[in-house]
Length: 217
Image 1 (cartoon, rainbow, N blue to C red):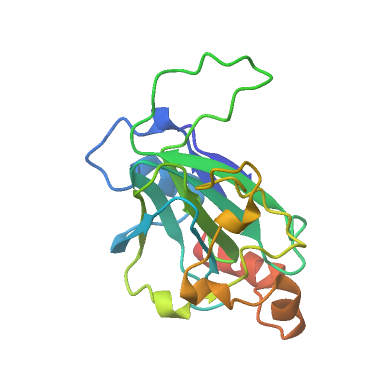
Image 2: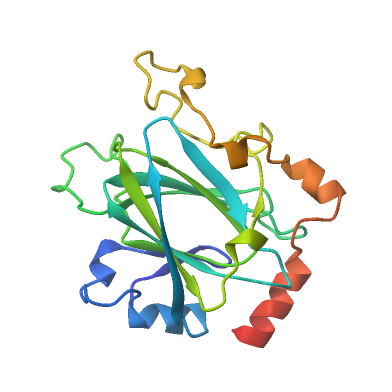
C-alpha cells in the first residue's frame, strides 16, 4: 500500500496504487484510513478553465461525510484546507493534481518539475476542498458513503485572502497573472470567509475530529 497521509484525514493515492482499475476505490485504502469505504454516492462536476469550485467541507460531528476524489476526464488542481479549529494544521493547505490520463514522465529538471498527478484523494470530514480545471472540460468525480447529504456541506470562500491559496491566477486568461480570469459559480460566490465561520462557531473542531476517529477509525 503506497497511500500517504498528507494532513490528518487527507490521504493521497499515487498512480501506482491503482493497478486494479475495476475497483471504484482501491481496497487497501480502507485499511490505511481505518474504516470501510462502501460507496453509496457518486456525482461528477464538470470543470471549465478559469472556474474555481468550492471550498466544501462536511461538518462534524454530523454528518461527518468523507469524499474520495478522482479525475475522470482531463486534469484538475485540487486544494484541500484544514478548517478544524484547534488542529495543529488549522488553515494549512495541500495542493494536489489529479489526472485521468497521465502523460509520459516529465523531462523537467528536479528544480522545475511539478509534483506528479495522483490517482485519487481521500478527504475526511472537517477538511475543505475545492478544484479548478487544468484542461478545459475536465471532470472531477466525487465518491461518498451511503446516505451522503451534499446539501449539508458547508462552504468557505475559495478566494479568502487569509488562506493564500495558490490558485493558478492565469488560468483561462491570455494575460499572465490576470486574477480577473478566475470566477466562482453562483453557489460559491457568496460563501463566507473562514474567520466569519469561526466566529459564528460553524467550523468543525479538532476535538470533534478526534472523537470521530476514535469511534469510526
